Image 1: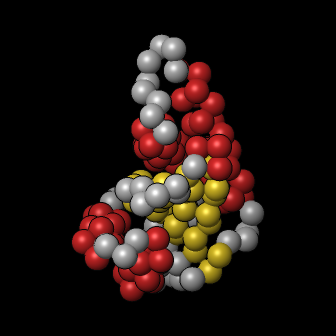
Image 2: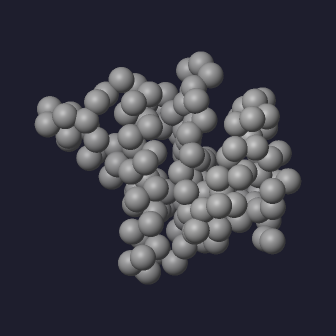
Image 3: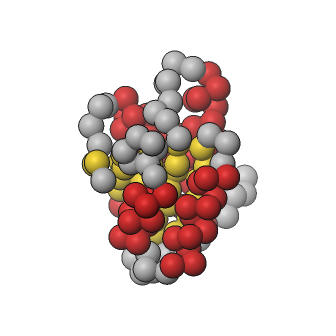
Length: 139
C-alpha cells in the first residue's frame, strides 16, 4: 500500500482542524490516530471504519479541549476533474461541516443556513487547495 499522506487544515475561527488522509497501511493510520487521541478504542474504530469504507469516509475525534479534530480519508488521491470524485469529496466535507458546527454550538436552521453554507464552501475550498498541491506531510 502507498505511504500515508496527511494534509492538516486549521479552522481557527471554529477551534477545529481537519486532517485529510490519503492511502496508508493500518499501522501508519494507527500511529497517526494515536498522535491525535490516546484512546485505543477510538483508534481501532477509526482504522476499522476506514477499511470498511468503499472509497472515502469522514470520521470525528471527539473534542479533548480547545481543538476538535475531524478526518477525511481517501484511499487514493482523487482526480479533481472527475465529477464522482468531487461529489464524494463534497459529501464527506458536509459530514465534517456538520461536526464542526455541532462542536461550536450552531444548529442548522433557516437562520443559520448561511453560516453552514459559508463553512461548507470554505472547507471544500481548503481541501481542494491541499489536494491540488503536491505537498503534504508524509508519515
